[in-house]
Image (cartoon, rainbow, N blue to C red):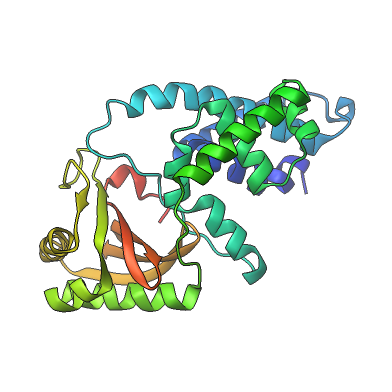
Length: 280
């Protein structure tokens, strides 16, 4: 197999975690492929390191322009959902670095901080290796990594990770929504639950986050009543955890990702922007 194709999955994973969108990540990986085809592989001592370096630097540049566009985004911005899976041994690490909640926390980092954090925490690169990738001194990278980690630790919430608990919660949640059972929905929601909807101005969605179990429950029942014709609801692993996917025909119309604390739903991310559902 071609060296690039062997590394494509890793390159896509790095780019997605830095950028938070599948489309931008794919564009970056395609550009990396073009650059790889412009060099003589025989002159590259470590092809994997070369490809990760090129991809990371392209992703940093792409994120700088993307952040400016996100400032004018219609309504809340959420990361683009991606189907995930893999071996059971990989799932905890995967969920911790690719969950929509974590990717939202990473949005507050600078592009360089985010890339350093991703390479260090998600992929286990050493500070020396990261320094070569981002063309900074090792001392600078250590300082950047420390700042990024401190910010993430101060902002992140420790959500439940047990897949069985999360799957059961997702099933109960969808049954309550589909049946319009407000009481059952309220019992599943934490009192201070937050609902964040991303319609991107292309699908009906609240322009601000909704907080509080009663307000969120009523908003979800309203959403359930506006499902597309002939809807099909299914469960899938999305961004490292169980999610509810609503389809109309063969097309995904919405995906709902739940984040739990002690078995209760603390945060809900609902993406209905059609431009963000292609990967599903």
